Image 1 (cartoon, protein in one colour):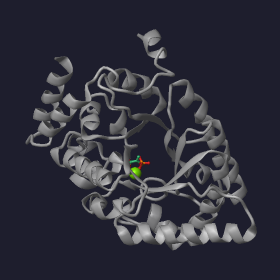
Image 2: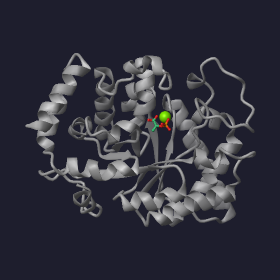
Image 3: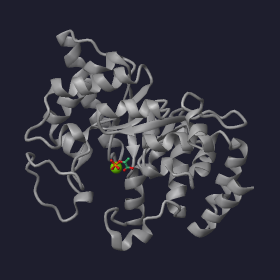
Length: 323
Ligand code: PEP
Ligand code: MG
């Protein structure tokens, strides 16, 4: 089986009837690039930049960040690389950033909220990103966007940074796509509006499930409610993908669900363009996708969103795969 999988390292991710998707890797450090490529990644769909900020006693400098982003872009040799701006807060804390204790950290001062408040931190990261942009195919993604105002504010900071670099005579690419994570239900619900002002969406199901079902993703006691097959979660995902496509934008997914073979047929049927997952899941996902028929997966997806329970949904998918 392993041998069979290894044959797929350089294969396309394409269904039997010709629908091509991108299978990308989630990475946490530049050293993960090698493993991503070995496992057949066609890109990086999520580079979590938090590692640069954690396990340290001060903020990373522009130079340190530039080197890390450049290493990833060069390592991926022109393949698409989605780098997410700082997503700190929630369960991830920085000892040297004095943030008040919060009653609900997952609903608190985190990610883009912190970055828009601490523009110094945000601008340093964006400068490093744009300086690195000439070394590969960079796409920048903002986490935890809740609505259009935050997106516009973040994009205004991007423009500020680009202008500064221009004035300083520092080179950067003008082709950097700007996208957002869809991981808050409000963003999913207004994704038709958001789609007009981004280049892409990436659905963050780890948080989207938590916020949609109101279930703490870290709480074992209620983990039975943390259900990727919840009809509400699947309806939101379908809506987000449809709204991206209506504006001619692409939609990816970088939450754990994207690499879950139990649900991939449905995501494919929804028209998801990019699946980003841990490197070790890529070849298995490619094997599955190359065995599926897109037109049939679309019919499955249409049926699934009409189901009342996740049990019904699971058995529909089972029947589809086992036919
Ligand atoms: C997500 O929320 O799905 C996601 C990919 O981000 P993280 O797991 O880093 O919150
Ligand atoms: Mg998240």
